[in-house]
Amino acid sequence: MIYTVTLNPSIDYIVRMSGLTLGITNRSDSEEYYFGGKGINVSCVLAELDIDSTALGFTAGFTGEAIENGIKNDRITTDFIRLDSGLSRINIKIKSGEETEINGQGPDISEEKFNALMCKLDHIQNGDTLVLAGSIPKTMPDDTYERMLEKIKDKDVRIVVDATKKLLLNSLKYKPFLIKPNRQELSEIFGVDVKTEEDTEKYAKELQKLGAKNVLISLGGEGAMLIDEFGEKHKMGVAKQKVINTVGSGDSMVAGFVAGYEKEKSYPYALKLGSVCGNATAFLPGLATKAKIDELLKIF
Image (cartoon, rainbow, N blue to C red; front, side, top):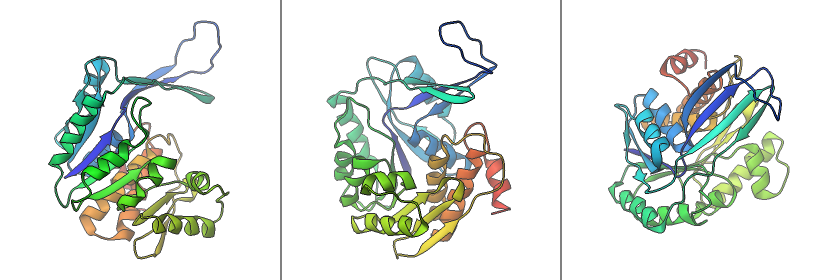
């Protein structure tokens, strides 16, 4: 089983406008909404690939109920901790020429509720996969991911971490199966300007020295690079279609990589399917669909 963790899920409310003027009433041209959060995105794309997952995390209020009901299907088991107060956040994304975002804070999470989530990790068995994705809410301690990984350290679990800076670095001692920084995040971690392919490979291997087995680097319009656990470099480009949306592309890449490795136990295939899923999301208003993934698989 694949378990995904989203500590601060959201409803992403997208408003499209021809123009935005402050201080007056503006009217939208169209609106869309999506159930978001990096772990949730991974579960949703896994479902499009016909792979089961269990979505863990916290939800609160009527927005939390909407998130749980909205993502539940035959391939996703929702097993969130319900909080007693507050609301799962709504993130507003205004698309009017330049994009403006207003992200909610989300509810407070008590130590008692966090311990309830920790108890759910007892269900994880040898051979399962745990995906920790995204940031930690302000009300949770900085060592949240470490405490979760410490809980399962004696089990044979594939750990996937898609996080930034200290969250990522502090997880490396648990030897995660996969991490997915982008080039900018590599620059921030090492305090250098990572621009070239050689630099990207060099600093990815530095992360391997710190404990990561496989390092998948998303390169935006240049595609993706994988440094696998054997030190081999693999590269994959991008399809030439109009980019509509980049939100969730990285999460889709993680889902595709995990699914590809589950199916074939091949790193080149995992990179291919990950790249296809990331591209599929970029070419759609929302997350990758099975139809778009199948279309792109024919040309990659």
